[in-house]
Image (cartoon, rainbow, N blue to C red):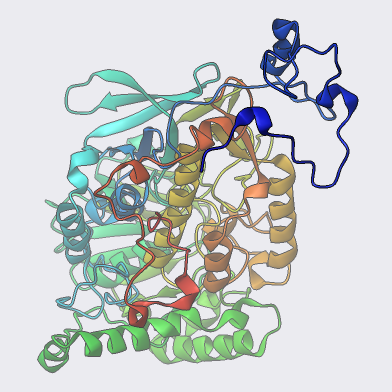
Length: 624
C-alpha cells in the first residue's frame, strides 16, 4: 500500500494538539504539512551536548585504574627463619597467595630449626611422632613412638624438598636489622651472609618472623664464666666430639633439655652434678602416652596397618584427639588440676623411692601447668643414683676447675653443660625499626611495653606489614604445635591475599584492638594457674608477670579466632593516589578471566554429588 505523505495528519490518540505543533497560516513548514521548522538549531542542541549537572550529594570524579580485579599485585614477602614455622610458610604461602614473591632467610646451613641445632644425647620429642607432624603430609614410617631429634629433622627437611621450599631459601643468612621505609612503604632487611661475610639489604612489602621460641640460646651470666678451663657448652651448641665416659660433668637447668641430658649422661659419666634451682613438674606423659629413655619402636603389625589410608587416619585421630582435651586442667581450683597434682606426686614418690629425702625438694609449690609439664623418662631414677648430686643451692661463680655455690662449696668438673634456655621473653634477636622506635626495645622488660604487645599474637600497632608466626600467644595449651602453625600461616595467607588483591599499601592492627586483646588475655589468664608465682617461658621467666607465651584459650578457640579474621580491627593505607579504597581494587570493572574464551567461567557448576553446601561460594580460588 502506498501512503501519500501530504495526506497524513498527526495521530493524537484523542488529544488536541497545541497550536505550536499544529501550525498556523503564517507558520513555515518546509513544504511538509504540520511539521514546524526549528529555528536557531545550534542554540537548541548545545545544552544537550553538555555534561549533565549533578544535583544533590557532590563527589569529585576519579579515573579508573587500568587493571582487572582478579589480578593481584606482586607481593615481595620475606620470612625470617626456616624451622618448623618457616617450612610450613614456605609450603602454604605459595599455594595460597597468588603472585607472591617469597624469600626465606635462615641463619643455619640447612632447615629444621631446633631439630637441626640440638644434637645432644637423648634429644627427642616428648609428644608422639604421629602427632608432631603436618596435617597434610604425614609420615607413616616413623620408627619410634617418640622420635629422636635426627628423625624429626629428616622429616621436616624432607617436606622442604618435597614441596620445593629450597627455591625460596637463603641459607647461612642471618637477619641483622629491619627498617621500615615510610615513604616507599617497604621493609629494608639487612642480611649478613655467614659464608661470604658480606652484608646486603633487600626491600620487601611484607615480613613475617618465624624465629622460634627458643632460638637465641645463651649461656648464663655467672661471674667467672670465662675462667673455666674445661669444656663449656650450651645444650643447644653440643660438641659431638665430646665423650662423657668417665668424666665429671655439671648440668645446669631442669627444663626439657636439662632433664633429657641428665637422664642420658648419668649412666656414662663418673659423676654428675645437676643444678636445679627452680622446681618443675616432671611427668610420665602429656596426655597418657608414656615416654621412655629407651626407644619405643612402632610394631611391624601397626606399621602394616598404615598401608590402609583409612586405618591410618583412624589411628591419627585417636592419638591426636587426646591433645585437644583437658581444657579445665589449667583452671584454678579445677578438679582436673587437683587430680593431676595427686597423680604427679604419687609418680614422684614412686620413682624417688631410692632417695626419699629428695621428694620434698622436687615437688613444686605451684600447681601443675603453671610451667610447661616436662615428661622425664628415667630422670627421677637418674638423680637417685650414687654418682649424681642434686643441687638447689644457687651458683656463686665459675672457677678454672668447676663451680662454687653460695654456701661456699666448690665442685670440680671436666665439663659444664648449660641447659638454661633461650630468649624466653620473645624479644626479636635483631632490631626492627619503624617510626623511630625499635620493637626489640619496646618489648624488653624495661621497655615502653615491657612485654610482647600484640594483637592476637600476629601483629603489633605502629609496625605496618609485619607479622609473627608462632610468636607471642602462638599456640594454645592444647592442640599441637604443627596445627597451630598451619592455622596461623593460613591466617597470614588471607591477610596477604587481601593486601595484594585490594591495593592495600600498608596494614596494621589498631591500638584499640590490641589493647582489647591484652585486656581480655589478662582477664582470662587470671582464672588459670599460669598466673601463680612460678617462672616460665609463658611469662618471660618472671613470676607473676603478664602471660604472653600461650593463646588466651584453648587451641580450638584460637582456630576459630584465626579462621575468620576481624578485618575491622585493622588500619589500612591504599595504593590509589585518589585515596579511594575501591579504585585500585575494582579496576576497569571486569575480570581478566572472563576475557579468555578458553577459561572455565562457571567453575561452580559441578556434579551435585560432590558439593558440600557449607562450601558453596566460599573457596577463595573457585571464582568465575
